[in-house]
Length: 281
Image (cartoon, rainbow, N blue to C red):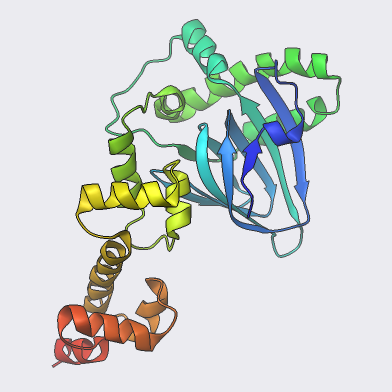
């Protein structure tokens, strides 16, 4: 699967700091590798979307939309039961965010950790706002540019008033510490993400070989062995919550019950079935 770079591949005006695209798709995608060279808001209209970034995962349907900072991500787009996929995409640069902050001086709250993607629910105001973006997308490029610069401030002012400023400052938060980003990506995807090493390496903006070297430097064992232990530890927790082994193996990413049972016995000395029996004894 090739890597898609946005908004470059949409042939938009590179000199514009905010642009809109009314995007339709008749093809579902699963964990497509996306490089975002600008921040983006995906106003979902039809279908379902999942976004995986370095430090969080967000899944939405057409009652919500997502805001994502620039960087590497994995995106899944699925159809709804009655229609294909449609999303109004609003691309914007950090310069637009900084200009808004300078003009409006929104109060910054102290957050322990920024998030690369935020989800918001639609309301009547936001639904009307998205409809206006669709209308603007049909105008000339120069008229679009002038209107969208005003509409961007309108949107940011509304969102910060309703949801605070965490998402706003997350867009421009500096993240130059490669080691911290690497560890955060691993810890956030330690058990249930079912990501391949290639996908994890992409989120870390590394080749697979570099990713393996970095992993062993930080965790003193191979990524395959480390992730297997994390999954088995989570399986142990789920079994203690009275889930059946036949339910747990799929939940933690094993292809069949037999391979899960063998791995579990190697780590804990008993099979999952025996562990459940011992709990109910």
